[in-house]
Length: 306
Image 1 (cartoon, rainbow, N blue to C red):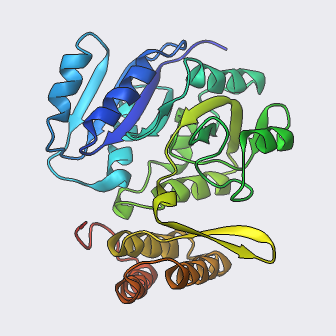
Image 2 (cartoon, helix red, strand yellow):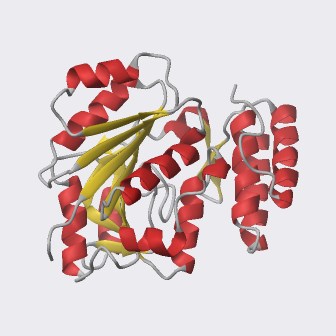
């Protein structure tokens, strides 16, 4: 396979120190990175100045936005810039995550070679996302997933049709040509699930490459409660009311053609509100508002982050 142009896209907002770690991990990759695209959602902590001072000689395209358009808007902007400027492969990341070792991106590209695929094919493959040396950051099969049981379930080094986007996620030019860019109108939450859902509908090659390791904190665990149900440990968690609004709205909109998924989401969140210590009345109100707006297709930045 002829080596094509590859860009990374990292979306950031007021996480200067974490972003610097992200960029350091990217420039240390064994695979050649043609451009590091940083989309800054109007940070106010001098992030850009710190990046330019720390990495003056690296091929960084820094896009500083006039306002915070959320993760969804950031990934839309970064993907569009990369696509419009002729990049064949794009690796998507949040600012609080980073490649775990020097071969993270190279091992994603090895999977492309193994499958004899190219940049014109519809591809969305992911690194295995870890919160430490053993445990996964995001659920794949169960809430007790570890790197060892994922390896046991893999075949030819991959888990098919099961990924944790946008955390070390490689997409191809061909996928963008087929399904477009991430939906910027989702603002935050479910933009990555929406893109994965659209890729599945387009019959893209979707897989987690278990030798490609990516670090990301399990942030949801900060507000989680573990409950034993029929002898099995179940983790319940809930986000802040304003974030719950966006996740409910966007889940309702994204899965509008799959009522079972929406119902499962709603029931799970109601149980979580009941179990977890949170502002219960406010959370319920935001869920109801989010559900109604999602049904109506009322997207964009409709309420301000708090």
